[in-house]
Amino acid sequence: MKLVVEQDVLELFPDVRIGVLVLSDVNNHARADFSSEIHRAQEHVRTVLAGVNVTEHPRIHCWREAYRRFGAKPKKYPSSIENLVRRTLKGEALRSVNPLVDLYNVVSLKYLLPVGGEDLDTVEGDIRLTRAVEDEPAVQLLGEKEARAPKAGEVFYTDDRGAICRRWNWKEANRTKLTRETRRAVLVLEALPPVTSSELDEAMGALEGLVRAHTSAGVTAQVLDKDDPRLSVDS
Image (tube, rainbow, N blue to C red):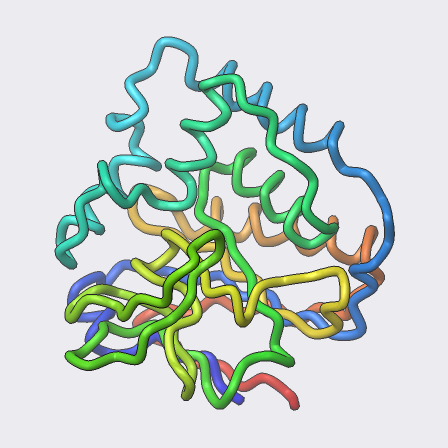
């Protein structure tokens, strides 16, 4: 299995960097409660963004511009980090899902980066970050009753069966979601300018440390960019 950032994405976003953590032997069924960690991360966001127009914050604005470039309206389809931030600023307490999801949400909020993950045992073939073409197969997304096909031109993650996360990091497919039964996973941290390489590395290190400490997972880390756009994942 490979994870690849395709050339059509790199042509549109030559400065993108994707931090990838490949996890093995995950203990994700622990009943640990990370509510306090999530609460602290949300309080951090409320402090940092107090009085700030969310759409103008550099780490939100870059994703709104990216969505516009591939034809998605950011007001209708907010990036995952904008969604988390807006929910936080409205006073919504994020619920605990499972250790991996809780931990990546903590890091996403702390560093204001989109972070997501997929269960590798549900992935079919390679994972590609690419742009959709006409007649993509329909996919059921989390929280939706009907399957819908990606729009031509949108940036999305897909495997050989179809989309696993639409509109880059807007919403993932139900099929590959992380659950308490997940044993192998891939986590991605996504960076566009003005986020620097060192800032992405710091966020990756923080997430790796949390995952190792709380799920006992083995972790392999790599950054994908225009100079190194693919990695191989052991089956």
